[in-house]
Length: 158
Image 1 (spheres, rainbow, N blue to C red):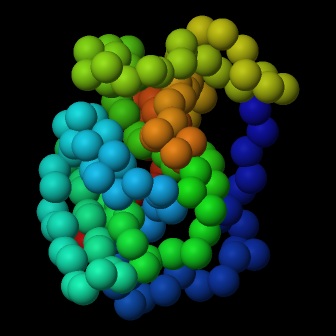
Image 2 (image 1 turned 30 degrees about the vertical axis):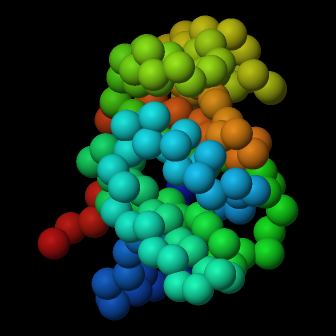
């Protein structure tokens, strides 16, 4: 794996105004089915708001996540199931995979990337290199990505 040195000074200056990614909107075809699926994952239901016949928003949050997902009616024109590579960072991919499987979720076997997916964890045990995947009922694609140690510079300082 190659890396790019982001400390070379070629990047624009880092912003100073606090901005947090709070919610990602998923395109789904059946709001109740999607809500039941994400609740089955063990995610917290934050909101289910209906305004008339043409608007509904459901928001759920994965355990210990600062970012939530939302879906509903009247939120997006994207095709249901069109999102790919939604990443869930986990510290222990085997435990995360086992938890989802125990909840009835179809999860791929663990794999790493070496010119494409290769069965098994990263042979060197590196963070960011081991994955498992699953999809919601519409086909929005999720990846569990094992991160045991964050790369330098990946944590904001207060």
